[in-house]
Image (tube, rainbow, N blue to C red; front, side, top):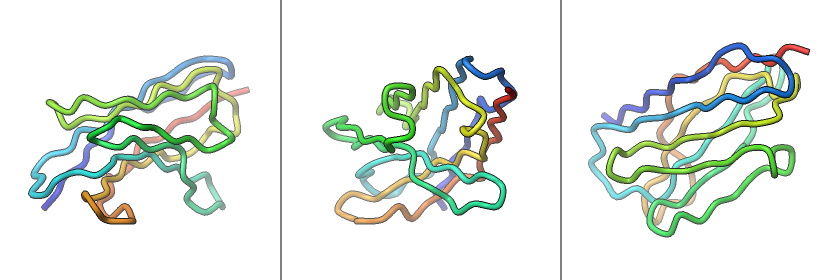
Length: 119
């Protein structure tokens, strides 16, 4: 069973920075992409960013463009999300996800890590 373990969440003041990480293990397939999603209280889970595993191409939600940067370490099966200029509206549980190569959806999810931005 694929295991995704997020780390690095916490409490930060508005304008601050934080980096969250996600390490994948027990992978029995080729990875197509890894991504980050988030869910704020009372809201639906939303896409934040994703990175393709082979080419490293990236995609971001409009709300985080220019502030968040996704990166990967293929050797460690780890994806990172560097978050800068954080805003209170970034407060959410951040989830890591994996999409298998040639699949169109993210099918494997981590347990999430809490990011809280105080004003």
